[in-house]
Length: 208
Picture 1 (cartoon, rainbow, N blue to C red):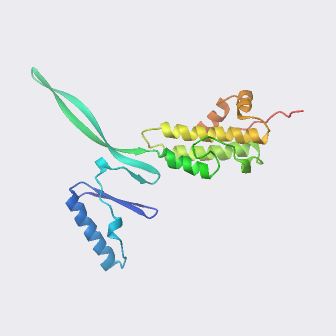
Picture 2 (picture 1 turned 90 degrees about the vertical axis):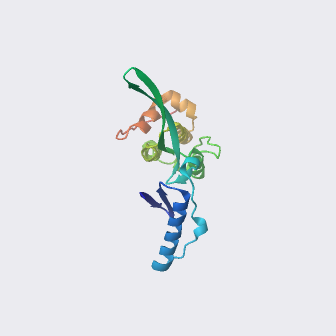
Picture 3 (picture 1 turned 120 degrees about the vertical axis):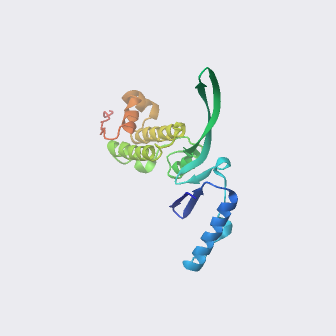
């Protein structure tokens, strides 16, 4: 059978077309191979067999599953035509927004509910360094999750980082995020987060 094997950070996934009985045999062969030839004592009860059509799994930062996309094809032979119903199995990767918000919350970019907050430890940096740090995080996330077919969750994460950046700058200059964005324009941070090679710097007018 055609097998696919992936290993990442202590987790491994092996996928194949076939019946559940065949996968159970493969599990038996693997356990015996590891124990008798590699002296590696494994735990068979931690090896789960799940049909991908009914199961979603979290791996490498993605929530993955198999989607069935139904479609109809019109076929015409001479004077007769008929519709053929078919389905396409598509491997879909979803951005896990709740775990990502949890990670941003631990890093003090937002609350546990996803409400953006300022990052006080960065408030002493220069304006450019503050935006640069937020921008790098946002671009790295955009690159990593660019393969996902659903970008709505990514837009929410970028919104949290963008507003957290604005509130950090506002905290530094003893202002509010709304006043800062009204004075400098809401497109300022958005343009920075979207462009890869763009370098952006600006100066706040001194208040008397």
